[in-house]
Image (spheres, rainbow, N blue to C red):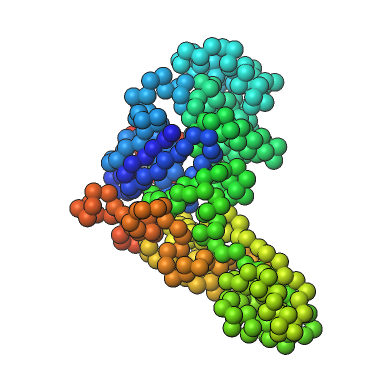
Length: 396
Ligand SMILES: Nc1ncnc2c1ncn2[C@@H]1O[C@H](COP(=O)(O)OP(=O)(O)OP(=O)(O)O)[C@@H](O)[C@H]1O
């Protein structure tokens, strides 16, 4: 198990990670999500002892990485697939790593087979495509047959077959009882791969829960209802009946109605009682992407100027609720529209980990009590472009 407690990392004036507490448990794939620059890689580097926390701690199996007995056999990681000596053959690269950790050479050939690079084992990795580099990085992570695995963006550059392979690999590693912690920006892929989610924004915990809980906490299930197109009065009659019964009704662009707060059988009964014919009555659930976008809207540092000019997504001060969705009203496939909020509308936009007081964005309160100022208590200043993450900390 990986456990972070009050983990904080500052680079000079920049707070990359703040008061992060979470557990990553064995036997499940735990997705690690957050906007660009939210602190995912920094957290992973601290887990692996590559960066020292400014405050707090993170342990693997109860030990900080650097004090973990036989660490390369217990923990495998893919952080940066490009961090390879390009002049070396793929096999030699893995062989060097294996020798450093006392891992037998036959394991090198095994993992080359697992990642599908056996035919290019004698090729120099500088000629590898992005996807081949990812596969080599995954092979290195698997080398010690570790119980704990960390993958930072493992599907970057992989073709669809490769993405499917990584998905199945992660799931099978977790099914073997291993701890699998994986970051990704690909929500659709995460939805298919992960069981649990840890979501951070501006270095702070936003959510720690199962995917299912995350989606239902950050979006509402809804019903789509359609009445005959040529009879708008039917639609109005139904809207009035549903609203009177306590439902929230939003018209969609194509004429359908999006209804929350009423179960499908009740909608059907109300339509029947109002003498309204239905052409569609179907249940819908928001996607992980919709739920994620809704949750992280206030914690995004880097946005396209095109979005800003269009007034699509203004910066919000930390802790602020996303603004209500602008007209036009939701319609299928309409970009920038997110599912309606859950029933606790007006409160937290998402569910909190149990038993923890709320801090900014609803994150757990600051460590060290009121004595320690929360660097996110003020609106975040404009951020410089992200530094070159391929360089070690001291070189930046
Ligand atoms: N060595 C460093 N020196 C100064 N600032 C740093 C350093 N490393 C990271 N940061 C800053 O810390 C913040 C978090 O960066 P990090 O790379 O951990 O984010 P991330 O969530 O992994 O981003 P992405 O999704 O874009 O990979 C960023 O603002 C980044 O600029």
